[in-house]
Length: 113
Length: 114
Image (cartoon, rainbow over all chains, first blue to last red):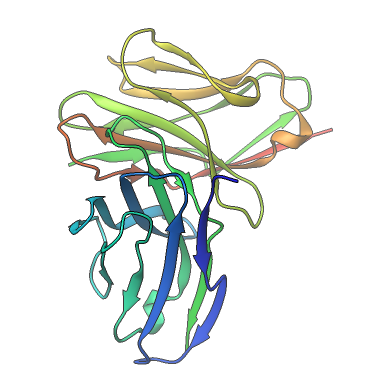
């Protein structure tokens, strides 16, 4: 089944404890993105990648890191999480071409205490 | 800078009636426009997109959207709403200059009453 998977699906952590949310897609998509969803704000793009070893900032990159060492994986790293990073996070992938739609993962609900 | 506005937080419609969910955008250059739907506790699903050409775009589940360049709008429509259409709807825009920066609206919650 073609899909984007994220792990973990739920995470409660404390301020300052480094964490990684993994994202993997099995559709051989070139482009991948991370978003956070907050009530009243919709989805905001954190980072995106248009190729292996190529990443670019979205609208809200502060406090996050990403890497794209393999085509299928695009992990999101929070080196020192803070309570304002409590949110619902989505990974998405798409075929090459900026006109293409994205396929979204199921989401990761992160709570930082 | 790119931006998307969904002016209605919530839209209520009776089953069988037509529905419209509004979206206006701002982008330099020509836009790529998308509609996505989110059901409770699920990720987003793609509904339809406008790239170029015909201003009326048809998508999944009987939805369609009309691109209006002069009004910079891309409203989502369906002739006859179903209770199962109740969900959160997002409009998104990307410009056609080659980057992948994508801006989403705040979302509109659609309630369809039986």
